[in-house]
Image 1 (tube, rainbow, N blue to C red):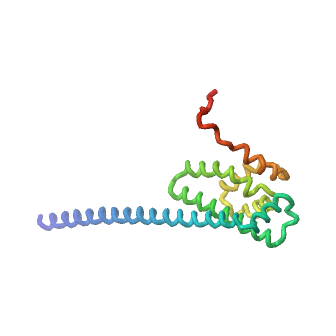
Image 2: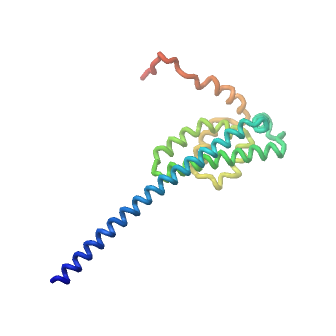
Length: 183
């Protein structure tokens, strides 16, 4: 009988040890996920920051303007600038989407892809970028590629400059005292 009680106590202690061990493993997993999220956010911020810095360079502005007007006149150096820019942008899009997906934020992924449509004209509104997109779609996340393609259907090639001219007037803020009407 004493031997049976000793075995029971040993099993009880072992079970408690296993439960505590599982608790510690779960705690470590949560901590690692929090660190991974912080690292992912920092990396993504850095990537987007590099994109914005590249966009401020005079060589970039010249290359993008030329791509909008006549892609055939792009020099090799301008093509390299635009190619690098497009890789950085799509890489950042992938980082955004993957970070949201890894944390089970599917609704936020859908919202991100919807919000992406407002940037598509700038990124892919010229023939060079559209050709680049078609050549590189094989490695892109299908949801990102589909969101870009859906938006591009409404932007005819050749009217890119008109589209950019309209951007400044189509998104005006409503007066502060006005209320939206409901139908």
